[in-house]
Length: 89
Image (tube, rainbow, N blue to C red):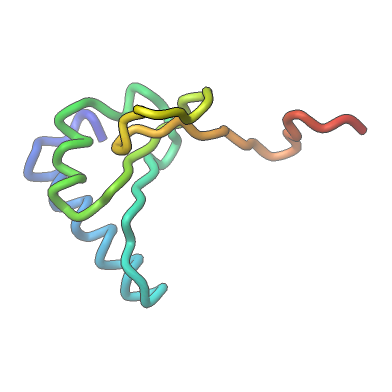
């Protein structure tokens, strides 16, 4: 994503939003980068997605969500196949 031009990024954001909304029937307001890696995002990309109507853009940035966290860049938990975090078995 970070390698796209601003116009390509905007097109991707708008097309993704429209596609999700047409399938789900509800507004798509959250964008998550495909692989959630920091190298895929940058400040201009997040700002462009905000202009597309997304209220949140996230990567797999581990950590607690607290005020005043940036609503365009919330932390989230990365879950991988076979990985159970915080559970004992």
